[in-house]
Length: 89
Image (tube, rainbow, N blue to C red; front, side, top):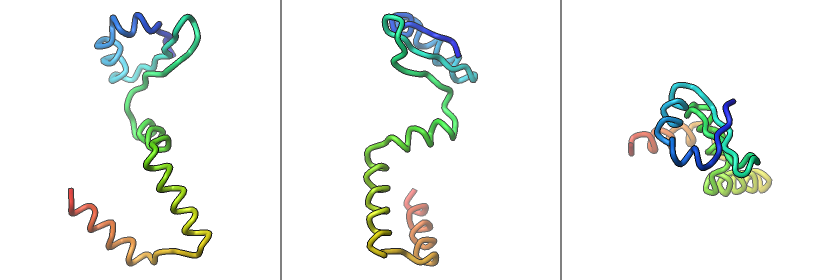
């Protein structure tokens, strides 16, 4: 993984993003200390971003709480809800 200082990132953002699109990853540093990462966007990156999204975290907690209370949904209902959500797109 290449390392890039935050100043260089500001100056060369377009180039770094193009290189990331091509598959390269960058460790962003401030005063020599790692502060961020620039990664190519992949399904894995999408999963990582989603896992840290506040709305997803809240929904996951609610789902686990429902499970503890015994609140579940049968497969047929879940499948129908998925179709309904996909038809809204």
